[in-house]
Structures are given as structure tokens and as C-alpha cells.
Length: 209
Image (cartoon, rainbow, N blue to C red; front, side, top):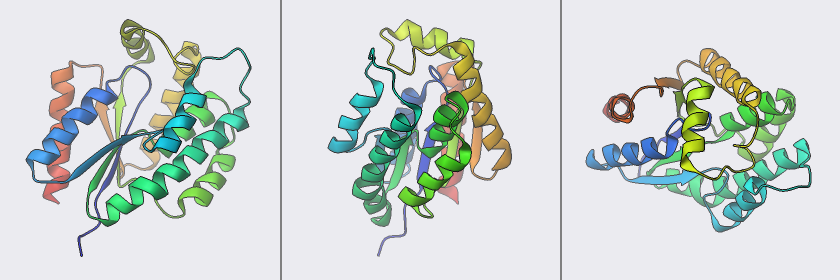
């Protein structure tokens, strides 16, 4: 029976280069002989991707904070049980663009949903499952948003004010300070090549363990 795979998530505010670094990370791990699945949240399965479309589409109707939170966890439940857990059990490594740390940051820090409410749903949906490692790509909010705007059309979250993302970033940094063994902060304000080098070195260390 294969050993359980590693569950590694990539987190950060907008424009920090998560998509680029996920591709880089997958390449590094595959070159090291590791079987890798790259996925994202919300999303990752057909049903969860449909929920993602509901969540990200700009709309005139105000979205209630609890509606948003429940949709996030509905997508996560489907993603976790249909894809993540079976692949981990099969021995594959999961690289995921965001997971529950993003919910604490965006719905908790950004929206102001109490952390206890998020923790209750986290336990209900995930049980004891948590990422083995969190790669936090961190950059000043203004830097990340300038990059995000340069990409083109903004989704419903990317249209939030800078103050929203400052609160998001603060929660990420607080969680990293609380869980230093799980979190790995990478300075994402540097060039893409420099960030990729840091992420590559981290992953090689994890594979070596």
C-alpha cells in the first residue's frame, strides 16, 4: 500500500503569483519522481467548479457573508471527499491553490465572520484533515493588486477595496506566526525567478524528508 501523499496549499492575497508558483512546484516535484495532482479552491471537481462560478461572478445582488461562507465549504466538502482524500490515500501529493486558511483570511479577516463560526464548519467538513504545509506567498497589498489589475478583468473578490485585502493579509500573517511548523512564508514581492527559486528549495527539502 502506498504511503499517504503530502497535502500542500498555496495561499496569499491577489496578484502574488500563486498560479505561476503552483506550476513551478508541480514541475519540481515531478522531476523528483513525485506523483502530483494540481487543483484549486473553490473548485477542483465539476460540482465544486460550478459553485466557484456562483461565488466569483460579479453581481448586483449583495451576497450575504454567511451565504458566501457556506458556498465555500460546500465546494470544499465536494473537493475534499471526491478528489483530495482519495488521491492522498493513493500516495499522490496534492498542490492546491487555496484551502481553509483562505477562508479564515477572506471570510474571517476580510468579511468579519467570527473565527469560531469558520472553525465549526472546518471541523464539520474536514474532521481532522489539514494541509501538511502552507506556502504563503506574501507581498504588500498594493504590489499584488497592481499585478492583478494588470492581468485584466477582476472577479467579485478582486474588486474589493485595498482595506479588505490588508485585513486578509494580516490574518494570513497571524496564522503563520501561530503555526510556524506548517506555514512557510515566501517573499512574493521579488522577481518571479527569485520566488520560484525559494519555492523550489522548500519543496526539495520536503521531498528529502
